[in-house]
Image 1 (cartoon, rainbow, N blue to C red):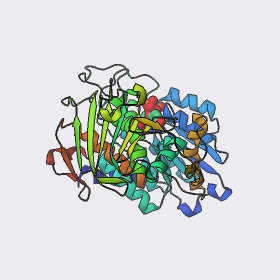
Image 2: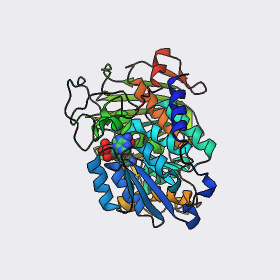
Image 3: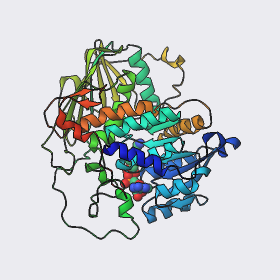
Image 4: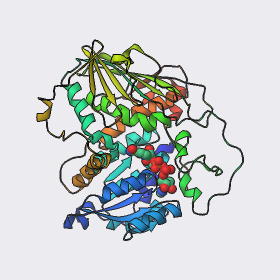
Length: 446
Ligand SMILES: NC(=O)c1ccc[n+]([C@@H]2O[C@H](COP(=O)([O-])OP(=O)(O)OC[C@H]3O[C@@H](n4cnc5c(N)ncnc54)[C@H](O)[C@@H]3O)[C@@H](O)[C@H]2O)c1
């Protein structure tokens, strides 16, 4: 049996403790949703705030491997039970929670979410959906099999500007789209060597639980926890996995893309520890009804990104937004800054006024973004409402898994600098056999 199947079996086995069938969840009988939160510092704290802003949510359980973070969250949500190990939480109070929110570092997304879904719990999981391609496919399959409400934490997906850009592109404002450039100068890479030695683990942190299914490794201050794990291959997905998933989401959705045919990452040679600090990742996709026969997506990250390119020149020599995407169509270009700014339509080097008269009639667009919090909450509320039987989520795992797979293929391509990799969607394998070893994880028992 391969490692993935063992892991999936393990998640299922762990989840057999104290289960109630979905049909007898007590909470939804009173029309409220009891949520359990795994990872309550960093983005987890923001997730808690957004969930608690829904009047029908009861924050019921909090789990964090850092006791100091857990104590801070407990102060804000004093009625919630607290746990250090999500497996204990799900086993002990699985029957009295209705939905699970996963806001941990990326390598724990699948282990925690799979376990919750095996227990028939709807899951809101932070982005990128998973750390490995096989996990994304497994998450999608399980959510479908169990018919669960799911949502990936790409809250800007529900923002006005992004929905507007999607409508404009699908209405053909720039004709069929040939190419998209997307960029972020953030640096979630690390070109240095793996650290030597070890530091004392802070008293509040359970390092074994933080590592979870990842291999044992000595603790080093400021290298992994909190936040910096993004830079390290065993736990994060680099800048592409961090920002790319947000910025690529609108082109991916608007152009109805599936997974790519080829992927090439121009970056430095792998060190085996951190992700490269600068990546230029080119993807070729099969055409869709919104694109030309072939479609190309190019991602730039790291300091100084993006590289100068004629496609990115703005009218009046204006400076490009720090982060964003540029759609190149047969009849012009559409700039989509990241985020909370309206898209800009450019034809022959000049900005065009946006004609929103027909767009305004479309469902679901809402009003231009006033505040981040108000707009951001929509994505969370959509999940809560869907769990309570009202409406659907807009970034369910059926969508999120394909977007994440695409992103992760670019991350894997970073292990083969400047080499074009060919992806076989049906087989879920690269033609280049040496790349297939990175599709799967090694899962430690912990
Ligand atoms: N959607 C967004 O805009 C957005 C923004 C930031 C981060 N994120 C995502 O949120 C997730 C967390 O990122 P972050 O920046 O908050 O990281 P972080 O390291 O700052 O925080 C992670 C939290 O999870 C806890 N944790 C770690 N392992 C755990 C485990 N096994 N069980 C329970 N708790 C655990 C940590 O102690 C910490 O409190 C990532 O997936 C990241 O991509 C999303």
